[in-house]
Structures are given as C-alpha cells and as structure tokens.
Image 1 (cartoon, one colour):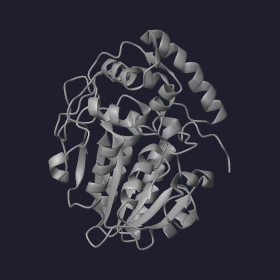
Image 2 (cartoon, helix red, strand yellow; image 1 turned 135 degrees about the horizontal axis):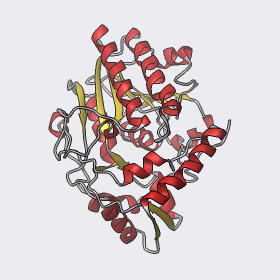
Image 3 (cartoon, helix red, strand yellow; image 1 turned 60 degrees about the vertical axis):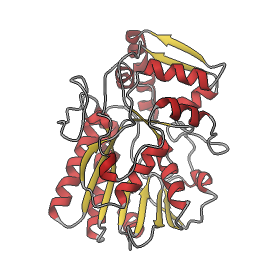
Length: 341
C-alpha cells in the first residue's frame, strides 16, 4: 500500500546501497529477505509500524514515513545508490483509487531519488499494461492496458522515463505477471480450506514464483541493463491448471466455481463497500475479467539479460514448493491488514 516499508541494505561494491520500498508487502518481504541473507540491512522506513514484526529477524533502523511525505523520503534516500520500488496500491481497483500511489507516489520518489544522486531505480511494474489477446508479449510488444491498475502502472513507467531523460539516473521497469507464493492472498484462502474460481479460467496465463520475482528485481538492481520488459516462468498455464495443482498440493481444499458473469456482477458490491470504507479489496470486476483473459509472456524474455534463470520454471515446481513453506507467524496480507497504528 502507499507509503509501505522502505528498507535500505548495503549490497557491496558492485551495486552499492539499495533502498527497497514496499518491503512488508508480499513480494517486498521476499526481496528484503534475499538481500538480508547476504548483506546487512541499514535503514527501514515504515508507514505502518506494526508490520515490522514480519522483518523482526533483520537488523534494521526504523524511520517513519510514506510515499507522500517528501521529508521522510529524502532521509531514506540519503547515500543510496539503487532503489527497488515495490510500494503502491497493489489491487485491481479503479484508476482513481490506485493512481495517487502508483503514479503520484512513484514520480515523487523518483524525482527525489534523482535529486539525491541515486544511480539506478528498478520499478516493479505489471503485465497488465498489455491487452494480451493477440498472442504472447515480449519486450517489443506495445502496451495497451485495459484496467485502471494497468493504466496507472504504464503512466508510472512513462513518468520514470521522463525523469531518466532529464538526468543521469537509470531506470529499469520489470513487468511482473501473476506472482504467487506461500504468503499471497490466494494461498492464504487456500490454507483456510476454500477458494472461489470466478469463471472457467481456461485461457493461458503467465505466472512467476515470488522467489524468482525477487531474484529478477535484485539482479536488475546489480546489472547495467535498462529499459522495460515483461518476465515470467517458462510455461504459461491456465488458472484451471493452477487450481488443479493447488488442490493436489493442499489436500482437502474446496473450490467453488462461479460463472464468470455472476462473479463479475457480484464483485461490484465488495468494490463499492471497500471504496466507501477506504479499504483495498482484491475482489473487483477487473480481477474477474483478468481470471478469464489470455496474457502470456514469451518464455525466456529478460532472463538472459539479467544473467539468471528461474529457480521454479513451471507452476508444477513452484506450487509444490510454496505449499511446503508457511508465511511468518501471524502473517496478514497487506490488502487484508486493516489495523491502524
């Protein structure tokens, strides 16, 4: 969510000191832990202090702040070489809801980073900037977003490109597909024994295990590759295949299949309620549409440029691995975390 955690870590002479935003989110925690496995954590800026418990085993200095607070961002960016930016409204809600953090917050962070002398910024974007209906996508495919979230991610990329053109800071935007793992919202529901499938979900879609998403972002922070590209694992798979493997990995899981049209209409009410309460929600009409849409990344895209290969090249290996791992004790996905400090 907007203004979520920022972690500063020293990564050695090759990439310098890294600042990670959104480090108590689902992907951010994995990035923080992979970095901390080999490098000391220097600084952490927190918008919601209670979520710091998920990083309690990392040695950090806490600094309060958020994406809309320039003073705290300036303090977090001091003596930083590279920024990995994951913070922002991570739900498929309307453009009006997601744009303030995804567009405004990203541009604010980037301008301050450039002014502070940051050498490189790695932005966690989304494959939802593509339409996806005309075959697979790669780094040459034109963006054509169809959701408010996709539009906001694309505008953030464009703002970063303008800032890069104005100065010396290099920008890399990695368009992530569906990222899954033990701490994501779907696995959370599955571990409670019940999931809802909003439609047939029989069209091909690209996925990526959270460990590989984090590895890609970290690799991009330490290389000279720059530009915009999607990334995914080696084998696109439909949501129907994904759910089948999830039921195998988690015996006893029950799946309720709801017709697409019914699910789409039903998602409007939770979205309106969430908007009225100013709380995020994952149950939106765009999420239902995405479940029933084709969106495939050409296998092998970007991995050679980053100098790595996926550790979990298919959902068969990735889901099995995710099912064996439990999230931190007391873990609450950031979208479901409504606690106020």
